[in-house]
Image (cartoon, rainbow, N blue to C red; front, top):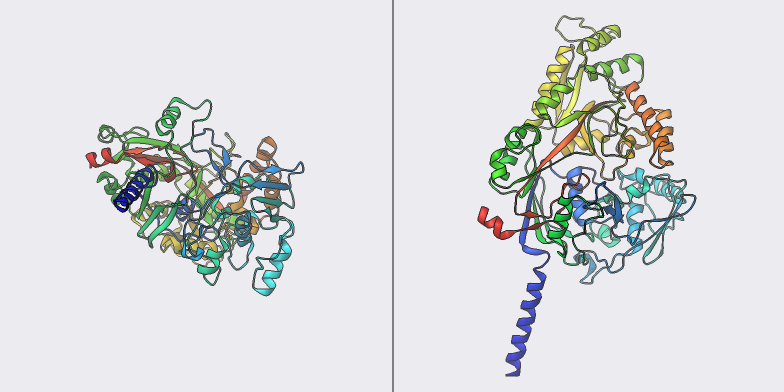
Length: 601
């Protein structure tokens, strides 16, 4: 009898525990979303594309993150206990981290729970400095940490970075305390500390799964709310809740929050994060299938493709009646991003700093019909970019406009003046030396890019220039662009930490082979960039940003392009959703009303 009662007691305890466990990370709740572009991999030190980073931000955790509900946006402690303790001279940063934070389970830990410690951050940061890793985010720390240069120099000589060599400016004072000592004040560093490349990484994981370059693209193991459960490259990514995730609850609304935010916080109060046990991400590159997936309720929310805006919106900012009747909600905002076209400054046709090459680039910029791009390709969901730093980002200056105007007539006159004329009568211009002139632009094989290609062909034909396209998948274009193998490419860059530095660093010459795809070199620009990092946000720094914008406009390594407006449709069963321009996929904050979901399907 006692044994039977014991069995019943154990069964009851298991049942109660299971019921309690359902209050968070419920395996019966699956958030379904899509990416329009394939991922490249999930090593925060190595992966540079926006879509891979969505996954990384769910798996790995930095010291700081944005408050989910606060507007204006502000950084708050995440794995740190508080904001950094910064010395009076701005160079020494002391950061204490939370105790009792654990990595997701992985065989490399041999069945033991692995606690996060300060050394995990130090190791992750050293990876950014390791020449073998060739991190595109090396610029976060390169040349900025006291004592790091010598360790890097030795690694270049020996071919191996000594991760055990102490670096004076980057160390763990104890198990839960970090110390950074900078070579000079750097007011952007706090933003960097909120980004995936600065997230903690376990050394055991890298040493077990790293490739010949020390990269771990297929085995991400972090302390975040989710872990990678399945990955079919370019097709599907499945995340499962990290059962080791610390106890964290939906945040409260900040003082002065609007009524909508207060109501959202009240409705979600007390819910432990994450609520959904799974996230399923489908890679759907074409816009029509994306819309079909949402209409068939296979997606819980999605960003409306620009070419299909009229299917979702009546006008520019109102839902079509059919979606309103389904209680779908619309969330819109200007992204902290820039969609620009760069010219490879080392290319023999469009590159160079002589007047004739500057004139060619400027004529291309003036010849391309950006208003047409906005009206046709973006369906009105974009604004002409007037400067490199977009709205909603520190450093953007309302009223500043340094872009070249759309003026095909002036573009043709400029080309004529510098000897780009049609010598053989075929309707297209040759170079001043008589050699053929064909612009070669990177482009993916998607139907969406083909539509944009047509706009380029039409615009360039109007000024007598021939343009052709290098067709490759997005990940391959990224690789080619980084090492200077593309002549031109229209790309996008988004800031996830809200600082103008995110955009100005794209033309900083030490970032060539990293993020400076234009391979632009200008001594004055580089010095101004360094100065902006030593200044806090304000009028003095903005003056430097304005001068950097003028230099960019003078040499034309970019067509500034547009600032995008993002429109997101959200199904009524999705709970906890708040549009956040620095957090496109806030999976850990979301819950699903599964009864409503089943009824509506």
